[in-house]
Amino acid sequence: MNRWMQEAYNSALQGMENQEGGPFGAVIVKDGELVSVAHNEVLCSKDPTAHAEVLAIRRASKKLESFDLSGCELYTTCKPCPMCLGAVMWARIPKVYYGTDEKDAAAIGFDDAKFYEIILGKTKELDMQQIDYEESKKLFEAWEKNEQKQLY
Image 1 (cartoon, rainbow, N blue to C red):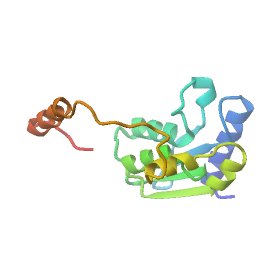
Image 2: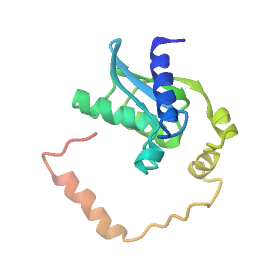
Image 3: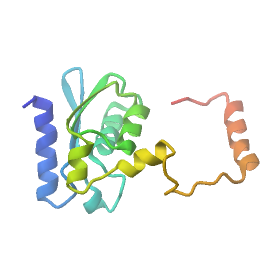
Image 4: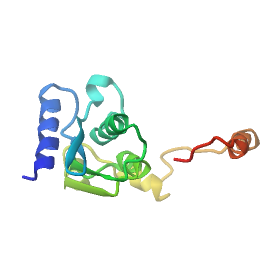
Protein backbone atom coordinates (compact mmCIF):
# COMPACT_ATOMS: atom_id res chain seq x y z
CA MET A 1 0.00 0.00 0.00
CA ASN A 2 1.17 3.52 -0.78
CA ARG A 3 2.80 5.14 2.27
CA TRP A 4 0.40 8.09 2.39
CA MET A 5 -2.67 6.01 1.67
CA GLN A 6 -1.59 3.78 4.57
CA GLU A 7 -1.58 6.85 6.82
CA ALA A 8 -5.09 7.76 5.64
CA TYR A 9 -6.23 4.15 6.11
CA ASN A 10 -4.81 3.99 9.64
CA SER A 11 -6.51 7.25 10.57
CA ALA A 12 -9.86 6.00 9.20
CA LEU A 13 -9.46 2.78 11.17
CA GLN A 14 -8.71 4.72 14.36
CA GLY A 15 -11.79 6.89 13.87
CA MET A 16 -13.97 3.84 13.31
CA GLU A 17 -12.58 2.06 16.38
CA ASN A 18 -13.28 5.16 18.49
CA GLN A 19 -16.83 5.49 17.05
CA GLU A 20 -15.96 8.98 15.78
CA GLY A 21 -17.25 8.58 12.23
CA GLY A 22 -17.37 6.50 9.08
CA PRO A 23 -14.59 4.64 7.26
CA PHE A 24 -12.90 7.67 5.79
CA GLY A 25 -9.37 8.98 6.24
CA ALA A 26 -7.34 11.66 4.49
CA VAL A 27 -3.76 12.90 4.38
CA ILE A 28 -2.27 16.04 2.87
CA VAL A 29 1.33 15.94 1.70
CA LYS A 30 3.59 18.73 0.47
CA ASP A 31 7.01 18.16 -1.07
CA GLY A 32 7.00 14.57 0.17
CA GLU A 33 6.31 15.59 3.77
CA LEU A 34 3.18 14.91 5.82
CA VAL A 35 1.29 18.12 6.49
CA SER A 36 -1.95 16.85 8.01
CA VAL A 37 -3.93 13.71 8.68
CA ALA A 38 -7.59 13.34 9.58
CA HIS A 39 -10.47 10.93 9.70
CA ASN A 40 -14.21 11.39 9.64
CA GLU A 41 -15.41 12.96 12.91
CA VAL A 42 -19.08 13.53 12.11
CA LEU A 43 -20.35 11.42 15.01
CA CYS A 44 -18.07 12.67 17.77
CA SER A 45 -18.27 16.34 16.75
CA LYS A 46 -21.97 16.31 15.81
CA ASP A 47 -20.83 18.28 12.74
CA PRO A 48 -22.05 17.07 9.33
CA THR A 49 -19.12 18.84 7.65
CA ALA A 50 -16.46 17.00 9.68
CA HIS A 51 -15.44 14.78 6.78
CA ALA A 52 -11.86 13.55 6.66
CA GLU A 53 -10.92 15.66 3.64
CA VAL A 54 -12.38 18.87 5.08
CA LEU A 55 -10.64 18.33 8.41
CA ALA A 56 -7.33 17.53 6.69
CA ILE A 57 -7.66 20.73 4.63
CA ARG A 58 -8.45 22.81 7.73
CA ARG A 59 -5.44 21.39 9.58
CA ALA A 60 -3.11 21.82 6.60
CA SER A 61 -4.24 25.41 6.08
CA LYS A 62 -3.64 26.17 9.73
CA LYS A 63 -0.22 24.52 9.76
CA LEU A 64 0.89 26.17 6.51
CA GLU A 65 -0.85 29.45 7.43
CA SER A 66 -2.48 29.63 4.02
CA PHE A 67 -5.81 28.92 2.34
CA ASP A 68 -3.88 28.13 -0.84
CA LEU A 69 -2.74 24.50 -0.79
CA SER A 70 -1.76 24.42 -4.47
CA GLY A 71 1.59 22.80 -3.66
CA CYS A 72 -0.08 19.89 -1.86
CA GLU A 73 -1.53 16.50 -2.70
CA LEU A 74 -4.48 14.79 -1.04
CA TYR A 75 -4.64 11.07 -0.31
CA THR A 76 -8.06 9.85 0.75
CA THR A 77 -9.54 6.43 1.33
CA CYS A 78 -12.64 7.27 -0.72
CA LYS A 79 -13.29 9.54 -3.67
CA PRO A 80 -14.35 12.92 -2.25
CA CYS A 81 -18.06 13.64 -1.95
CA PRO A 82 -19.38 16.85 -3.56
CA MET A 83 -18.80 18.89 -0.38
CA CYS A 84 -15.25 17.63 0.00
CA LEU A 85 -14.56 18.08 -3.70
CA GLY A 86 -15.66 21.70 -3.32
CA ALA A 87 -13.25 22.11 -0.41
CA VAL A 88 -10.44 20.55 -2.47
CA MET A 89 -11.15 22.98 -5.29
CA TRP A 90 -11.33 26.02 -3.00
CA ALA A 91 -8.02 24.95 -1.40
CA ARG A 92 -6.55 24.65 -4.92
CA ILE A 93 -5.21 21.15 -4.30
CA PRO A 94 -4.24 19.97 -7.80
CA LYS A 95 -3.83 16.23 -7.21
CA VAL A 96 -6.09 13.76 -5.37
CA TYR A 97 -5.39 10.08 -4.90
CA TYR A 98 -8.33 7.98 -3.70
CA GLY A 99 -9.02 4.36 -2.81
CA THR A 100 -12.70 3.46 -3.00
CA ASP A 101 -15.30 5.38 -4.98
CA GLU A 102 -18.89 6.64 -4.71
CA LYS A 103 -20.33 3.24 -5.64
CA ASP A 104 -18.49 1.57 -2.77
CA ALA A 105 -19.64 4.29 -0.38
CA ALA A 106 -23.25 4.00 -1.57
CA ALA A 107 -23.15 0.23 -1.04
CA ILE A 108 -22.58 0.75 2.69
CA GLY A 109 -25.09 3.58 3.12
CA PHE A 110 -23.08 6.70 2.21
CA ASP A 111 -24.96 7.53 -0.98
CA ASP A 112 -24.29 11.00 -2.35
CA ALA A 113 -26.08 10.51 -5.69
CA LYS A 114 -28.79 13.01 -4.71
CA PHE A 115 -26.16 15.76 -4.38
CA TYR A 116 -24.99 15.18 -7.94
CA GLU A 117 -28.62 15.28 -9.10
CA ILE A 118 -29.12 18.64 -7.37
CA ILE A 119 -25.89 20.01 -8.87
CA LEU A 120 -26.97 18.90 -12.34
CA GLY A 121 -30.46 20.31 -11.84
CA LYS A 122 -32.09 16.89 -12.20
CA THR A 123 -34.11 17.12 -9.00
CA LYS A 124 -35.94 19.75 -6.97
CA GLU A 125 -35.29 17.98 -3.65
CA LEU A 126 -33.71 21.17 -2.32
CA ASP A 127 -35.96 24.24 -2.46
CA MET A 128 -33.76 27.21 -3.36
CA GLN A 129 -35.22 30.68 -3.92
CA GLN A 130 -33.47 33.97 -4.55
CA ILE A 131 -34.68 36.78 -2.28
CA ASP A 132 -33.49 40.27 -1.30
CA TYR A 133 -31.18 40.55 -4.28
CA GLU A 134 -30.70 44.33 -4.20
CA GLU A 135 -29.73 44.41 -0.51
CA SER A 136 -27.41 41.43 -0.87
CA LYS A 137 -25.80 42.92 -3.98
CA LYS A 138 -24.72 45.92 -1.86
CA LEU A 139 -22.30 43.61 -0.02
CA PHE A 140 -20.64 42.76 -3.33
CA GLU A 141 -20.43 46.43 -4.27
CA ALA A 142 -18.82 47.25 -0.91
CA TRP A 143 -16.35 44.40 -1.38
CA GLU A 144 -15.48 45.61 -4.85
CA LYS A 145 -14.68 49.11 -3.51
CA ASN A 146 -12.49 47.79 -0.69
CA GLU A 147 -8.88 48.43 -1.71
CA GLN A 148 -7.58 46.02 0.95
CA LYS A 149 -9.62 43.03 -0.20
CA GLN A 150 -7.85 39.76 -0.81
CA LEU A 151 -9.31 37.31 -3.27
CA TYR A 152 -9.24 33.64 -2.45
